[in-house]
Image (tube, rainbow over all chains, first blue to last red; front, side, top):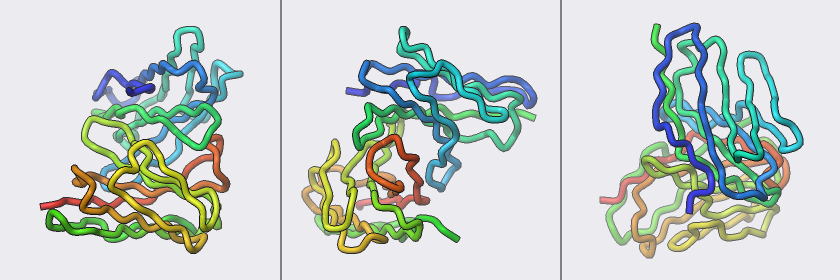
Length: 111
Length: 114
C-alpha cells in the first residue's frame, strides 16, 4: 500500500523555465516531508524539507509547498538548469523511524 | 572525506547463494538503514539500526539479515530465502534514529541473481 505517490514518472522542461514536481500522500499522520535528488549510479541526496506547521519552505532555486487539506505537496525549481536533470523522490515521515518514499519523477532539462 | 561507502557497486550471484553487502560510514552517525529500490517503486525499508547491537525489521525484512557489531558498519545479507533478490540496494545513516533527521545515502549496490 503506497502511502506516498508521485503520479508523473517523468517531466521534461526547457532550461530557464520552472519545473513543478507533485507528490500526494494518504497518511494523515505524516508531519514531515522531504525531497531527495538522485543521479544515476549514486545514492539520493537530501534537497529540501518542510514541516506540517508550514505551507512553504524555500532554499535558493528550490521551493516546497504543502497543502495539508489536499494531502499534496509540490517542489518548484526556478530556473531549471541542466544539472537539475535527475530523479526526484518525495518522502514523508510520521515521526517514527521510517521514511515512506514515492516512486520518483525523472526530470530532464533541455538546453 | 566523510561519507558512506557501499561495496561492491555491482554484484552477481547464483540463485540459492547467500550474499553479503557491505556498508560503512565515517560520519559518526548512530542510526543506519537498508533500503531496496525496484524499477517504478520508491525505496522500501528492509532493516534499520538505531544503536550498536540493536536493529529492527522494516517493511520487507523477509529473506534478509543484518548485524550491527560496530557503529561504522551495517552489513546486509541477502539469503536464499529472499524470493526476488535482484534489485538496487541502498544504505543510509543519520545522526540519530527517527525520520526527522536527514538520512545520508551511500552510492548503492546493484545485485543481480542469475
